[in-house]
Length: 302
Image 1 (cartoon, rainbow, N blue to C red):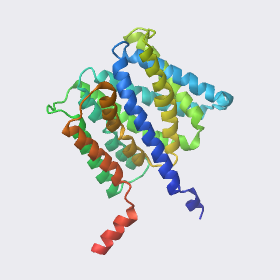
Image 2 (tube, one colour):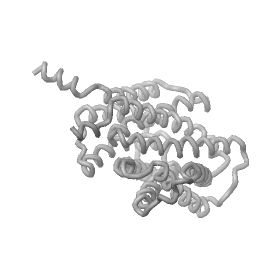
Image 3 (cartoon, one colour):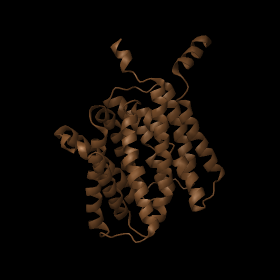
Image 4 (cartoon, helix red, strand yellow):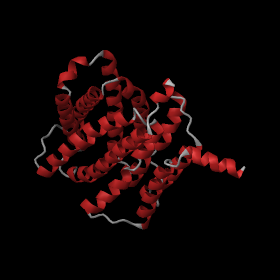
């Protein structure tokens, strides 16, 4: 009886999934904004401003709660923030040595790492439907991202670390989101990433102040929507959804990045892009088929 009350309702799941899809739309938009902004500023400088502003905004939102940050919440936020810093940093350095297509595909491998890590650490064994959905989405990601030359290099290895660290972030967030205040948890994450990005900018690029209004608009969108709102919503959604389901919804990000690349950067959509996007979307929809319905069909066939 008590266990039934703790299970999320179907409406709650739909709301959480819709909010996660909203995140992927924002992240898909920022891909085009960041790509254009990097013509003026270095990636670490951009991210230092992005996460610095994100930390200030989230700190202002949670100003009345800051005294409630205890050792447990601080430890969780520092660990999650360090994983986010690793994800963004390894992806950034990896892009110097590999193609954008390879980087996009390898980053998307978090849909493979997440079920494996969930099975090992959370004892969440993925069902056949989730495995099939991940395979379909992975094929779609390969079609969308990989170029005819499939050779691996040092950059691919760096981006692979990015995918793994983000998978670990999703797994750990599953527990931390249920035990901590989400505003404070998000604030600590943003602050940790901001400090690390600022230090990286000082070491590798030199601190600088952007001068372009487009770059500042991009930074503000990335800070408020793609950082504060996005990671708060992800934490909220993971109070309701499993890590595997979360990863399956977030894999829609490359689909929206392609769409905004067309709208904002004038990129063209090839038949491979259409097919890849369709397969990724199909993989996400596959998880919407009720398991009971599949079991019922299998039972009737037997």
